[in-house]
Image (cartoon, helix red, strand yellow):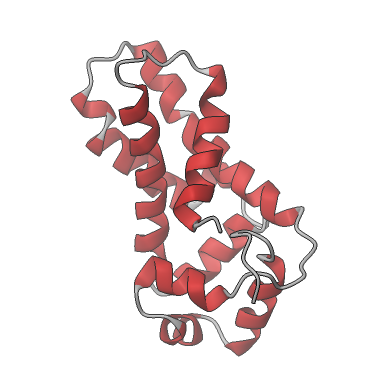
Length: 160
């Protein structure tokens, strides 16, 4: 069973394959990018309308490059990781450019799912907010929950 953080890390690693990251900082950079993205999702999930923002991003209905999730992940990555490393401008730019790529890949993965309902959206909300269903119902109506469960089918490779 893959967790949301495992799914994000997998997309980070796949996306970064074309960037030459020095081996002595590769784990730090890739882990930091994954953590930044997960942190952005968690923070977004707690703001009014955040669940809808996440749903739109992960289903490909929102442009990954302009999503608030992507913007926050970029800021977190710059602040928590890149600012602490002595990287040249070109490498730094290439690494920052990975954030919308990862967001887009997650969105594409979810658009390709067959919607068989393998994922419990409550588990995703709980993982992001620690509040479970209460957040989802306050932010987005009951219909979103069922729709998101269907749309996100297979994300975590989990059976009900």
